[in-house]
Length: 271
Image 1 (cartoon, rainbow, N blue to C red):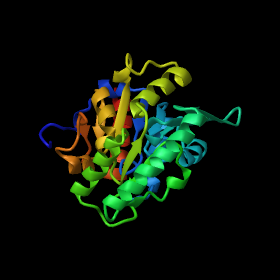
Image 2: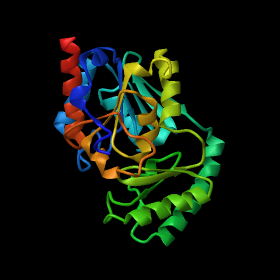
Image 3: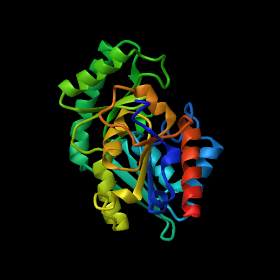
């Protein structure tokens, strides 16, 4: 894996100058050991101050997305791995929301999700429902290392297998296994958001984006964007990802994101 990834130092000023949007994961990409540092938050703000659009994509719940859209320096937040998107119009003082499913489907799915979650907790010792499960609409998040001692890789794969056998989509993040019913993902919702909110074709213009992430649930985004960047801890998932980022930072987690932003801004100014 180390031989495949190119250093962020090789990104180049022409490539940087063409970027108009940064899409980024949150957990262990912007955050460090669960903490949003002042430096990482400032990096988000610096992107906006330098004229770049910022869209966050995360497996975190809808309840968090409401907060992030209102209070972070971002343009939109795709939550629950593509189940929903929140954005805040500061001039109109109005929160916008887009959902992948209607209320009836969400209600029906919740009963099925609860049944699968119960089975997982019974069959994979040491796991727990994610502490943020109470504010999720679309998925079930099984905690394998955030608030519990780390579960083995075999245990994580067992969670995935149980979810998939129930007909769910299952994605492994750096802290949770997220499972849901439906074909949506971070990429599909990001495509809708860019088209409808910003009049940007995410497929045609993909060379004008950077995507930053760190774990297997970022693989579809890594595969789609030629300017994909992994923070250094992406190496922890060597051999367990369907697609790798094109570039990698020297630093891990939030420090890696801060490194990426500083490099991008410096390169754009030098062009």
